[in-house]
Image (cartoon, rainbow, N blue to C red; front, side):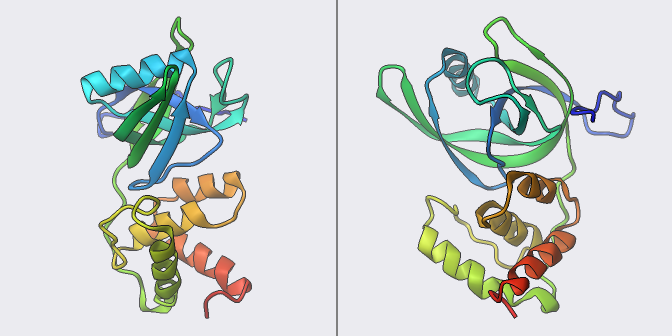
Length: 209
């Protein structure tokens, strides 16, 4: 199975850009919050570079390999992340909090001499801003309760309970589902379809009507 799409972008696709990639056993969604502990030298250098240049990095779910050691293989679709805060708690250990931005698709990748993966990526179009359909409004009380319990550090404000994409992303990042299922929800382009899948999952468990 191909892990990456090496097609040349069509003339009508968004401009490509290069991103350093953080390969993780987690999935970041647009506007999501990602706390990270950074200690590997290659990622310390990468984060320092991003801070100095005020540039984002990419987050991709690992398909083969580990978060530490040799560069891992990842899924092609990931999310750009921008550092919101950082703290050097002790020498050699950096705590950062990143915020998810837009999604992207990896077109090609290479590892630099430090072991940081550099990828040429194609930004994916933002999902349309659509209201939550009347038939799926039953999801909102549960998400409001989850957001209140989690706090702004976990589900960052502003909260947009009237936006189907935002609601779907927040559910997708907190549901107790396998990582591959989370990845598939990230890759969906239709926010209403994502909500319908989430509603079915929760209804089967008696959590929404």
